[in-house]
Amino acid sequence: MSEVEQFLPRSEARPPFFVGVDLGGTNIKAGVVDDIGRIISWHQTATLVEQGPEAGARRIAAAIHKAIGDAGLRPADIAGVGLGSPGTMDIPGGRLMVPANLKGWDYFPIRDRVADRAGLPITFANDATAAAYGEFWIGSGRDFHSMILLTLGTGIGCGIVIGELLLDGEHSHGGEFGHTIIDSTPAARVCGCGQPGHFEAYASATAVTKRTREALDTGRGSSLTDRIAHGAELSPKLVAEEAEMGDPFSLEIILETARYLAIGIVNLMHTIDPNGILVGGAMTFGGNDSELGRRFLDETRAEVGRRAYAVCSQNTVIDFATLGGDAGFIGAAGITRAEYLKRRTL
Image 1 (cartoon, rainbow, N blue to C red):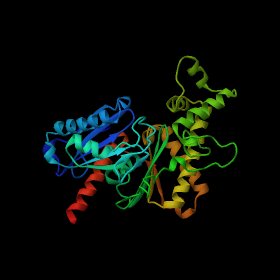
Image 2: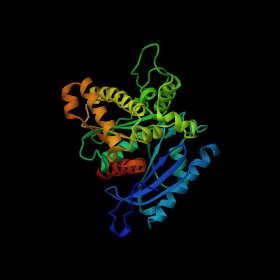
Image 3: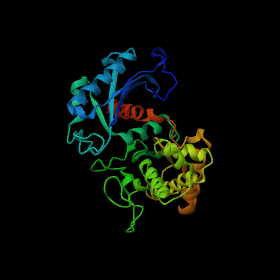
Image 4: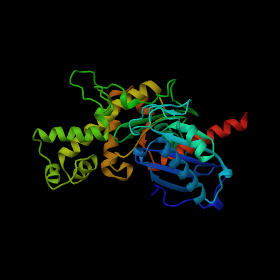
């Protein structure tokens, strides 16, 4: 299901209309939004990566048309389609490069293939950048001129928006902040990409699980041990559950993660100097709706205050993102809307 409670009735929507697509390794999400970012319809289907990129392009096109039909619209009513995809990618060329979550889709011209299958022009974007733009357009960053979104999940995604500028970089690798180095010592943790010391190796959901397992294996006492012995799978969610039940070790892991997150945030502050930095993704420990989530963010802010220039720590908003799983397709739609508006002014 979508994160939104209900869709906007077509009769109340403000044209022009845009479609956003969030392509993931597991699911394809496509949604139709109006000119101010309100969702009219939303559809999700399995990606089925193993069937290959040509089949994937057909599935994306089918999801686009399903969302358009569910909105009570025709393809001719759509002003643009935005496609957010995981990297690595060549954004100007509309190609995937070697995407880790889309095995076997290497060097596939996805933008043009989807455009051909859907019969609609496609604007291509990095998925983290699209999610950041969604928050910038109608989410927690809507009052910011510049903002950064960090998504904590299997890895760490990063999208950077400055005004209407999306920081894609000269080689479409701007915002790969999960692979910045925060530990250069010989004992540095190894990232999933194979390189040591990367931010992802310390503050991602994968890292939380690994750090927890290593500590438990040394004999650290925790209620997690009993949960795992009874069949529970070790994950950040399980760690959060036990922390909320009062397990000191689980809380220690979460607060340590907050301090690692802060190191990354300080580096971003001192590089970009944005109005705000938002934290989203699957691992927010309940976000602002949870005492644990609020404590996690408070610890992050406190560590930022200890490490950053005062002018940065005191004037940069650090908060949770609000659009959840909808941010990707809303942002992709917002990016193609921005391109549409540029064309209209030429």
